[in-house]
Length: 292
Image (cartoon, rainbow, N blue to C red; front, side, top):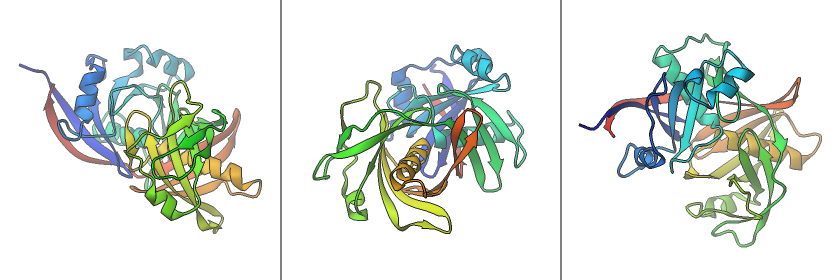
């Protein structure tokens, strides 16, 4: 008899995940099993798989507890192809919603919870409309590789930004260019980063700033998952890149429209440098059981 995995399906602005609870780290799924779960035709279907495991129950959790002893829970995140990833901005909001709904943590509006990830500990705050996550200190990292994508006539320069995981952001001239890009094909980066990168294609709104808030549209090809309806860390990277290009007068608050909805991005000073925060909804869709 095959073991049964009790799971929950969740989503944040259309970025969808399979979540399951394994507090003591007893469920050891292979990359092939994780990819089978995420498969949209033969499995449950998702952009990634999130395992809720106590930080003390897995090797990567030791670093999280050393960074913050309050990081009891670790978000063990894998892409749709089964490969591990450092962080997921939409996923971590859904992850905290899952912990709350399953009685694993308590969190009042305005309070924050420390969550361990491979990209470091992240603080997630419960808000009236969802959750906000402090993605930590960002950095310009990855240079300016040339980016080629199917249906874009010429290669474009990208901007490498790291927000706990690697991104390359590309500015496009119009909504037509953004809508016409075929992101079912993997964008080609030159030079190619050793560990790969998520690639965001961005168009500024007209006007760019309204009521003190910057506004952009974005599509994304996620490393290991393909095009997704949303990428939280990608939205943060896209807003950071647009602010960088816009210059010193650009705002620190952004509204990022993705195919799956709208995310908020805010830059703010902290002791170790400027941080970036991501806010948006997180919903649990259904529960199920899967024979492994």
